[in-house]
Image (tube, rainbow, N blue to C red; front, top):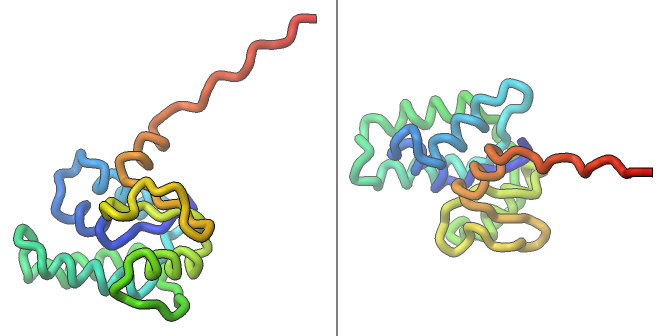
Length: 143
């Protein structure tokens, strides 16, 4: 699964019910034993700040939650970027993680066609892709 999870997906998965798309995405991606998820320090720092600011997430649970996430990902260095610009930060993170897709539910980015060769897809759309069976093969040619 060559994707990058955005901070909002980690946060939504941490506070949402287990059956909702963000939680399912995180479970599938972080539970993949074949390929560990790559991320950047910006993604983790932003996730931590968002969890700490979330009214439904207990402050004392932020550190253990971030430790759990860090234990399941590999942190890669990214190019410099404006940490307050989500699009720029996620593009830098995607390039550092060597992926062409970012899963995010950010209202300004989710389901955009593409920015600089990186596709942004919502957690709902990604889950639909993962659970939709491939199309049937074409019928054999009669000859």
